[in-house]
Image 1: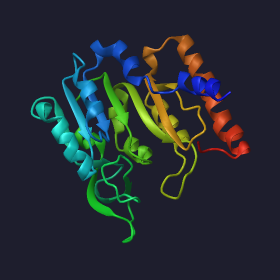
Image 2 (image 1 turned 90 degrees about the vertical axis):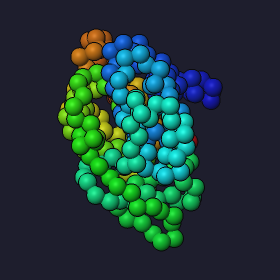
Image 3 (image 1 turned 90 degrees about the horizontal axis):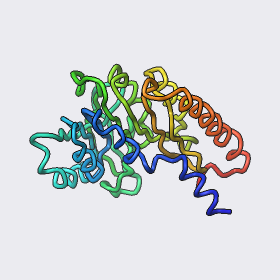
Length: 248
């Protein structure tokens, strides 16, 4: 039974996002990746033939140092690596790591911190202050550990210029700092003209949603999306809570 369920979950998951967007490789002109962690995923975008610039964001100092080494050949002409957290306002914020292991990809941006929890002070910026002049057909890869809504609000009109996006969301509230945000993310992206075509149907606290610009999709694909979103909501709002297993 477990094997069939895993096959079902993987069929609709975002694991094949890179393969999916390669179908539009010739259209893609620029990329926004936050956080880029160690830069290995960024290297995949470097291979895209028409990409002129990659905006990479990684506020974790340990991960960013690794990314700088990974991406060193491209930092002068293709990749712009920023030490900022994306948010809906400008200023300072804290990067906290409850396990004290900065660089492992689970650091979280927070307005507050405890002296008992390892933290560093970082800058937060609105994405539309960094990226503003680009034309259409961009890619967004957003993995910001529970800060997706703030990052998307701070993106403003940049969202309208995307052709595809992969966004990590919270399906269920994990704690006060990691509240469920998938509904809000769906609303923001739909308002910007994007349709979800891959969704996390597995029982878990977080997962990725893949969006494509609605005008790029056929009527049948848009209808498919409506069915998929209905299934997503049915599972995460009713079935998994009823079974007492939002987590994996």
